Image (cartoon, rainbow, N blue to C red; front, side):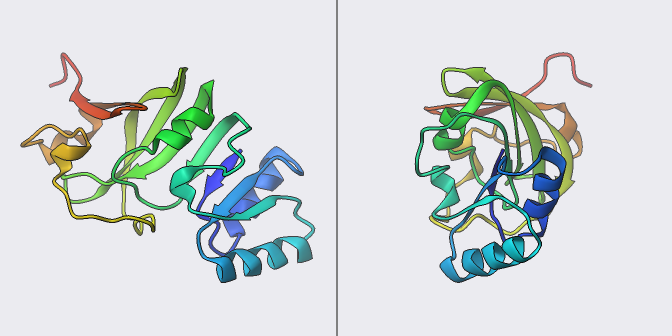
Length: 173
């Protein structure tokens, strides 16, 4: 399992408890926060791999394929690195910044060849992933112009190495 955004390490501990020792790799951009979380996890006897890196780029070793990827910070688009590191059939869960006035948690399934597809499952508010936060219109990230914020459940998200597309499902009313 790959977790983007270690923070205090609490979520990492929960994930490791659920999936077993040495099954979670967690990435934190802030070196001090990563070190503190690593110390807390060690003190609690939690065996997880804690890395200091920009989570937008996924696991910097880029050698592993993950069955699960979870992000605890909002992204404007699903990063291509995550898609490359997601095993076909694996699950990716992340809060996606939307033009609807809130973030939308999407659950996507890896479809192979660095792509995934899925649907929104909840509205949420998360801090933005650090790294580049350039102000750009949502249409630059695959959102259709003029979405109906009340119909957030009726959209599908498709992402690959070239970007993402958010589409209103056919037959949705």
